[in-house]
Image (cartoon, rainbow, N blue to C red; front, top):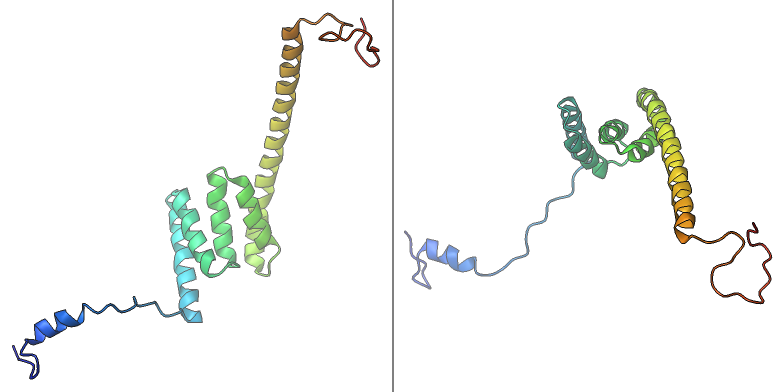
Length: 171
């Protein structure tokens, strides 16, 4: 160990002492364009791997990481849409696929359109079923509400003596 002339401390002690001064944490340098593009490719490829492993949530997450770096990366949008569709998140899948379908990458536009048609058809069919179920529930609930009231037809509820009966169901 070697001693400092002025303090008499060892080199190790001098280093320990200097660390007591706080300095701002180091910030990562911004990525260059090529570094960013490489990270996008890596995340997008990881997404494809997760799709092949049928790990849908992870696939969507990796695609989202790529899209955080490049919001217009068509392959990542298609991959995230595929994962979302498998997770039952059809609206999110449709949104991503429509973005790609309006893009310039012909191969990805073709892939997006091929995926989009069946998802939209499925969503439309599901929407019809939900609408029909709502109608049935409303009709059942409305009929049940009237039945439970035991109101005589032609008599308004409450005391409405002297009030004209216009518009009230007359029996």
